[in-house]
Length: 473
Image 1 (tube, one colour):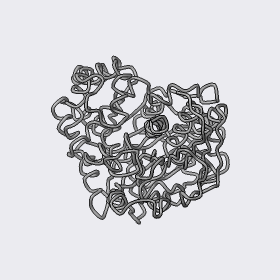
Image 2 (cartoon, helix red, strand yellow; image 1 turned 90 degrees about the vertical axis):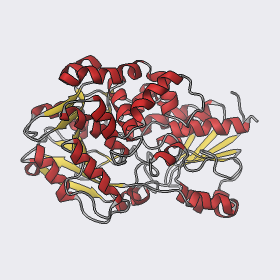
Image 3 (cartoon, rainbow, N blue to C red; image 1 turned 60 degrees about the horizontal axis):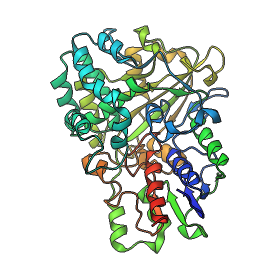
Image 4 (tube, helix red, strand yellow; image 1 turned 90 degrees about the horizontal axis):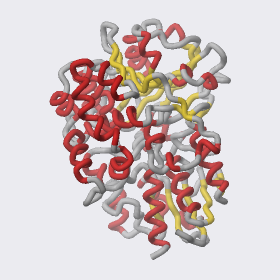
């Protein structure tokens, strides 16, 4: 598609940069403005604890980046991106020293799951083999007529029910149920809410299809590669340049905003009608995270050393424990034994820490805007499966929901998904107009649009396609 003209993108996170790339590929001159001095949004890497220890501010492990139709189609390796595959994507330790390992090879994974192996393979195999078609539907706005209706029906059969229902229906072993529930808990939904199983299915499929890789040097490498590729197409990124009013953006034929509805309402000022403003004001934000980064003197001393094979470790115990933890996110106080997601990238990438030292990244889910300190309860959960963990801590950096929002304006109240991901807002976000902002020629491309949170760039891709269609009307 050939175009001439100028486009502007507000926000240099993965979605904004993906949108900018799509527009530049179509021939537009693209300017990207980023409020923070370091571009990347949730894909930034910083020295948050001690010199020489490089920590990912947001996402650390990137199955969706590797599986994304847009990001996987770009020559990012040519521009410096090197994705490292760990020995195993995921470990889920249980009390007593048992650990459930999710292996990348589906056949190996099925063998390790014993009596549940055949059921796991029946669930995953058709979706893994057909991921290129499935991804177009899963990582985009709802399609009235899917490209592969029978494939989507198979996905829906497992994904629409609550995670607890799907796990109990398919699996017999409590360990397998816990493994699946941990995947589903990435949704921030209660595990007995509809569609929570969909997140477990997608993350399981991506683990077997593309693995759960980490970028060498940190998540900033994804941002850097996207910027370098954009610049090769003639685009330009200006950091440390916040946009507070759309009126500041003059001379552009189309504008894409990688911001959430709350920020856009401030930027749009009087350009929205009362109905449009009320519609955006009704958008609901979801639960938050409390995050800790650690500089360590040694690897985490897991009770079961197999945990050291995995880049990601889920600390939640049984499915029932995780169900309780996630259901309490609708209360004022989080669970005293929360579900925690831990990443240990320095085990696979020695550029993350000085020789012989390590980093770890962990968060738990908390209610939206939660003001409390979760450090002790998170460390108790780590110590539960790795006694002596506190003895290897050199330094730590904690980020509350308020702290996260201060470092990235899109993380409203600590919500890393750009809004609640319940059934209504998963299909129509932020409104039924999806990427259309209500202002002519201005589109939304943040994780507040389909398909939602994650480093995949698909929100930006779909918004840019809408914008190009409008330009060529």
